[in-house]
Image (cartoon, rainbow, N blue to C red; front, side):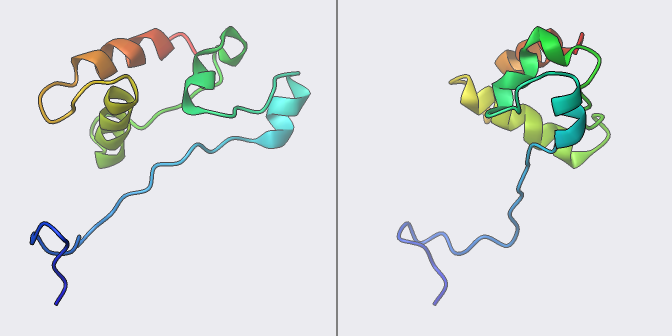
Length: 91
C-alpha cells in the first residue's frame, strides 16, 4: 500500500538540513542576508560560519548535499564536497 512508483516503498526517515543564521548579527555586520548555501563562502562571513563536526550525521548530510549541489554524486565520492568545504574553512 505504501510503495512508490518504482515499487521500493516509502521512506522511513528524512532529513532536512537548513541554513540558520542570526539576522540581527548579520545586519549589524553590514552583510547581506544569505540567500543561498554558497553565499556563506563570501569573504564577509570570515570567522562567522559554523558547521557540524564530522562525528555528527548532519555533517555528512551537509557534505553529501554540497557534493550534489556541485554536480557530484555522493553515492560514489565526496571529493568535490570535501574540496568545497575546505574552501569554507577560513570562514
